[in-house]
Length: 531
Image 1 (cartoon, rainbow, N blue to C red):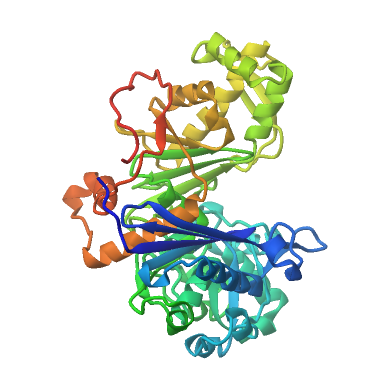
Image 2: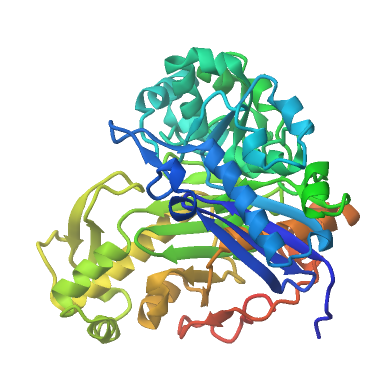
């Protein structure tokens, strides 16, 4: 039975549209939640969806001071609610991946000398060389991406080093654009942070290191050596290494909270700041993935998260350093053609009814008698292709299928593609593999049955609301636990690492996962996910 706890751990998430916070106690029970919505609660910054979309429709930015003021607001809300900041033993957080912040010369001293008599946004209003930060939605750096790939010998060579080919939203290419178009502000920059390490800096009262996991989403880090790749730095901008600082493990304890928070809000001076990370790595922690697991989000677009040991980078998909175990990796693959495509086929082949859609899946055999379909209604990310392609059981291309066959061809085709691309990145289906499904389509058990058939593994559904935020609260607890009880595991025991890393937290979590109606032949061999 879980015992009551008078200690708690905070997880913040600086996402695109809002700032969220979750507090959990030693039993991982949520004891507080709060949020600040940028558009509605900070209207003076005139954002839509938390961003500014510029006239070229390619450049997308967010005001740095909006994020700072949001932290003022959320801490004020917590204080007004009677939240006891003195009970916080550690905090961590996440930020939208690929956003960057440019600290002006002299800002470090301002961070160190913050007066508790003033709000953060007043103290830091002159600290940023670039006042609107490029964020993940920006796609204006095609020229810089081409230059970086050419400098490194091609897209695959860049992926081999950094885990990904060059992407417009990745931070290295954003920095390269700023250096080219605004060299004066680049030269004024003392430190470049990611949104995650920027947020950690606010709490630390000093520049926080970029963590391995978020840093591996920049096209700048050698993911095998866990250090900046010098050829990448040189191809992006002069003196870049000094502006980025030295990356650290995602479980690193950066220090204690700034005295600003002790005096203004009543934090304990012993409250630790654990390295912040990106929102995708934070979600991996929030979903409590373990080695061998695969998480699939079935939403407007589909996203696959993987915990892997031996990655094989490709030009499709991304390999990041793992935020829970710095010796492991996580892979992420995005597919644009998700629920919109499923909904189109539902309208055309099932009379707009999910019930009829499910009947079609039940009426057709596993394997669909060899009929296979590929459905890319819009230009896909993985792979870069568009169009609808159908092949029948005789391996002949056909213009269409009967309605029931079309429904199964779509769902099997989507999941077969996910498995193929996952295995291409180094994922291996193990005896203990579990598939964790989330997102709107995960409520349909007949769709999940196809997922179980394709991966030959039991499928569980999981509620991932606020997963990045919650994952960072877990990581705060994880960070101080690692500090008190180092978890380095000998090579001979690597096979048990997925249990060791999280088991040391003695997780006592209420069951949040339900096994699907899985007839894959493995039912009964697996217990529900994490108790």
